[in-house]
Length: 112
Length: 114
Image 1 (cartoon, chains in turn cyan, blue):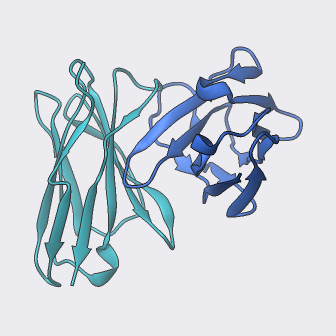
Image 2 (cartoon, each protein chain N blue to C red):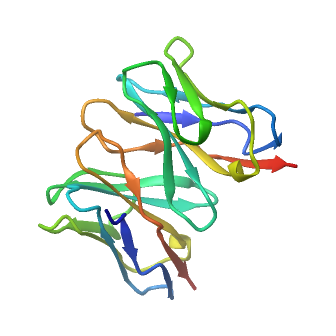
């Protein structure tokens, strides 16, 4: 089975722009979660989706949004980028709620 | 709200020596606990998990962890360190009962000295 894939792997943007990151879960997995990883704050939870519904949202400003499609693929969007949004964004998928989560390789976003 | 504490951001261990990474958690409900490993420029890989079954959990690559409710701990051990164990290790907690929201500790960067 193919693992979790994230595109693009690397991205460079400038302040004020917006960005969309994509996550394709493992086939059959209906849950997708997103995390932000930075050296200062570590790993922080962004959102969790299950069957196209957002079930949980972390403590991030409204500039961060996401969605999940009927095929379980998920996207997250960050609008009006700030320098502090530079981070590794990780996506994880799981077949169920409360099950093991499988992480993708991440998208490295750099904001200049 | 759940949280995890991992002390000592950098841990040095000699090759062949015991690896011990400490994790203490806080949770208002019975927790699920996890240890993940991250190699450079990669995502997270699950080492092992506790989901209210056996308190001593065995994982991949010779790692194991013991859930101690009285101490709110879930320390990770490996009897003999190998050079390939050099990586960053994260402890994480989620609520039991169908919640995929993970709260992570700050991580331990493990350096293995030959």
